[in-house]
Amino acid sequence: MADSLVHSSDPLHPANHICELCRKFYTFGWVTGTGGGVSIRHGDNVFIAPSGVQKELMQPTDLFVMEYESKKYLRRPPVLKPSACTPLFMAAFEKRNARCCIHTHSQWAVLVTLISEAGQQGADRNVFSISEIEQIKGISRGGAGSDEIAEGGRKIGNLGYFDTLRIPIIENMAHEEDLRETLEAAIEEWPETCAVLVRRHGLYVWGKDVAQAKTQCESLDYLFQLAVEMHRLGLKWVK
Ligand SMILES: CSCCC(=O)C(=O)COP(=O)(O)O
Ligand SMILES: [Zn+2]
Image (cartoon, rainbow, N blue to C red; front, side, top):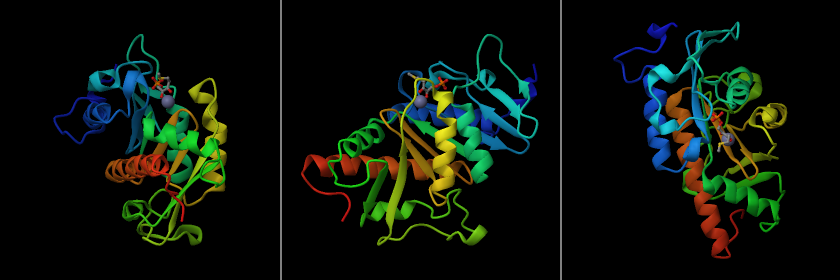
């Protein structure tokens, strides 16, 4: 097995970085009970966690490495299977040219999908929308978060205070990998989104690099928690 692919003293090497991020994310309740995870596309390769393991305890040698173009595994730890989220991470890499995709099982993400389902915000049940909250400015306009080029007429930079943030919601399915089709459809339908909520399940969010995926995930989780608390107080989160 190609251990050289995951051995590095650099803390920002994807194999080290994924393990460190998962340890952090566990403390936020994002990767509880083996759920959720993170994948990084780095150079020609994609680094993927194993399926069904305690994500906060992973070591770099537990990771799978896939060659991006050929989709062949260059490194497969014995016994383990690659994360069931792999097709969804690949959708963000392929359709948005993302370099990092995070999947959380955050309760705040799940709760906003339940409140939207119940129609209690009077808005479309398949979209989470929020406006006039400062943290909206932490989210990119361009989907993959391209802050350099306005590809195909896409807007650049981050949302402004008076913009409305909209995150599509897709329905959950029995198996994670079966979500790929609807997640891809949502990505196509919402060219400016950097995330997709999965009802009663969690969130997929991506970025042009690890820092952007992580800060967008933090901003979204903040906004979801705020929205739930606003709902509890009888306040509307869409103005
Ligand atoms: C209790 S986790 C159920 C599976 C799931 O939703 C998930 O995100 C984890 O998948 P993985 O294959 O990476 O363990
Ligand atoms: Zn999941």
